[in-house]
Length: 351
Length: 202
Image 1 (cartoon, rainbow over the protein chains, first blue to last red):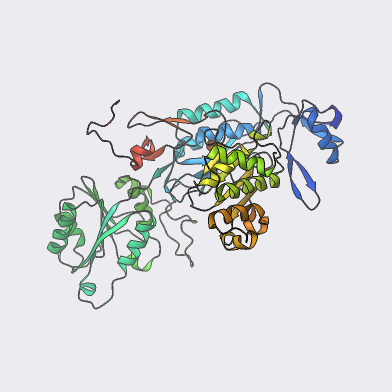
Image 2: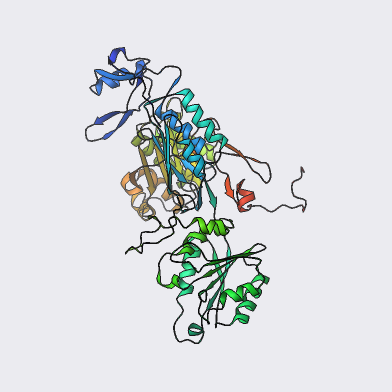
């Protein structure tokens, strides 16, 4: 947000009168055949030792900026804003570019935004921060957000208000580290079990889970047999398993018994159906420290499904519940773009 | 900056012995400083303008530290554990940076540069002194984004581990299961406690 302010304090002065003043912008030096770069950075306080170099650069007059005691240059301000906004797993450069700093992921994980707090931050005077969506799975060094002070100089009181607000709501931006979950997989379907068709689910699940740092410890193929599925889940529960994934058998046909098998196996919290397409027949459940996901067969056809939205949250140690699954409804419709651009699209971006 | 032989003598004394790695490190550091226009990097004001990222923890690293004055404790020396005989010299004010990599082929050229020396170790040591920079190194101009939390100067970032209470500096904390943790608590330790009770002053 920005309100009308006094004119920026630009003045033009002869270079020989510039000692003690502050440069309003970067000053580029070109040494033919050798280098081109900023000899002096915006905000640099000019010393007597700088004058000769400035003259050699052909600078006879300078724009300078007179900062009052209660004003902060945008480069200094943005470092304070970035520090206040950035929680664990969020880092930023020491060198603002054009008054802006990009906030990046320190390690792979689940990006978390306190959305309401971010919105309120942007209601404050003369500051801004824009981020990617919360709950995105991010890689190390990935860009997450950017922040800046709006004017070239910001009043100290406005800057302090923003920094204090971010401090009170710390961390507005953070990355929850992915945990190396041990995953076990049950592929269901008479057609796969009997070898009538070749399984393709294992490769899909393995790629998506290992990409986030999990390990697929074990995989079995079972027929559409409620008791066998249930027994296998109990077997997995007795092992060191963080996440059990079942594939297929989640719909409404008589042969779809996977959901019943899961219900028989001892999972106390089971949430069936989600406001996401593809993936409406998704099941998510918990038993002690083990989670279970029932993936509908749509995952074989669609490149991106609800699995891609929930898996990162499980990997980050979260336990999404019915409300979380319902909240996905806004933005829960995949447009089936060819080629798929996920995550650079609206899918899963509840707003 | 002092001349090569003086720097090499000082570097060897500081490191503990003279070796081919010292020669490579001294020459690498001298070239890195030359490329950045630094002629007195060990003293003010230039000491505050240089950060060096070394990609190996071997003899050459100490030589680079000696010549340039960069130190781990000053946060001007950064260790990137790549196992590569390389270093990147970054000028904090201009943003200019050069990555210098020691050529593995330099070993094969040692006998051409010092054919009169039979001992392989001594031959390498002398050859690396005489070798052209082009034969010794590859040099690439690069851009390095130095994180605010990696900058020299006073500690600007502190967090407290919500498990063990340890203060974590410079944004090395980790968010795990909605808790801010130090890396040992979040990711495990490189050591194993000897006493089952854990922490004890011994």
